[in-house]
Image 1: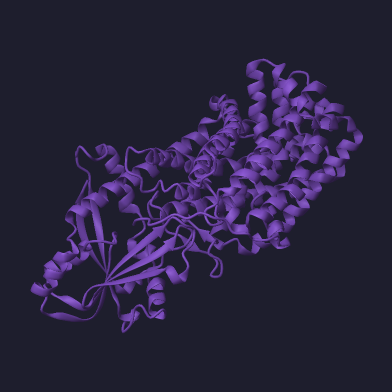
Image 2: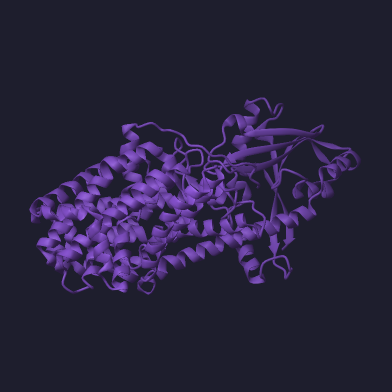
Length: 636
């Protein structure tokens, strides 16, 4: 497959209330559950994990969290990064598409950008394994506030809940998704009310609205302590990257409205309420979130928080499915079985392999780390690096769009410095668990880069074997005097030349069908291709036509539907699609020690991935009973 163009520009979704409320459930589920653990971890870091928690430390920590939310989420993501959209779609893959890095020649700066971008995409998988674990675990830990004897049951309960979440994926989440938004609206109202309840008991904590408290507290601490506090405070902004990644689902303005009107005020009130409680009662540091509530409300709040954590988990799992589909479309991952769980909604998909790999990683994190305190060490490092990569790529997009480089360097450079400071702070947690999401991300990035390089090598080998169209014309005229009745479609990986399956068919049979279609699927570097632009047809010779089907990286490339559209548009006539025969090449990769290839062991990994990838016919929606496969060995 090859990409033919990239496009920019945004779409205005208006300000519908339903989209704004829906964004609360999908976009802000993760960051909305951060009060369960963020201030607690930052306060523990400020108290040197067991020391005295001073009022200055509490005010410094809550001020730091407030200004992290304002600078990173409000200014950087909501006002700056969300402008870098690909026809309304956001996320790291959309940025790579805008920069046309996918087809960059090896050794160029765009090729290096591709490596950086793929690492960023891989980091989302690491984040996807940690988010459900820490969210649900921290919610269930509320049981220990009133019943310390239940501490041994926290991990088993968390494991059962998470298994249920991952089992639910195969059934589809359309119905449940309809209640996510309203539920999270209530959740944010509860956060705000709890925060107001705490602030009313100690309104002096509002002095921490000034950034002076954050700066003075950090500068007064030992360098290592300041970094530990920064790393813990960063937990308050994890999940903010979903604003950009999920922009295409709701639109830029509903997401911004939900943040500035509902999510941000509720989060700030809750953090300040927890801080007010800690100023009055430093012993509440073990779980300030739950101790904000009256005693009678603890158990209902545990149940409520657990549901909110499940919603946060669902949002990140769905995001990982979407990222996987986009990566497959753009050639960054091997084809996988993708199942649509709702006939009327393209975004509702289920990727079995990814679901259970993510489940295994998440459950390992819960069992291996055991507590939200321990998991806090693993959380943040992947997200902070992803945020830095996003800032860098967004700056390059802004320059590509014609913004003054000096202005871009000044604005994005400032945010990049902030990102790098938070990443450095989180990097100190590497040995405390930060290695876990980085290990997952490194593994995924290795697979992505290996697959991408292997696909290039295979395409080079195909090019050497592929006949030019001129030879096909000569072959048809000279060697195929007899024509078989009916129509044959030969799937081609390139929009030029002759498919290897067609060359083999003619070589073995010395004949050809009356009508031949050379069908190529092209994934463009835009989210969606309109039906009017989907089909491009050219006649090579009488009876032989080339059909190019264009899809966006957010669309599912179904060949049968593309050909039906061509018939409806009158571009393809006189053909019964039910009697069409599809001829597909099935390739066996043979690793060799060629100078221009990868190391043999990496080629072996690529061959394994290629051998276990979803079959071409199944992935492109070709009717199984109409498929004929031709085997070919390709050396790389």
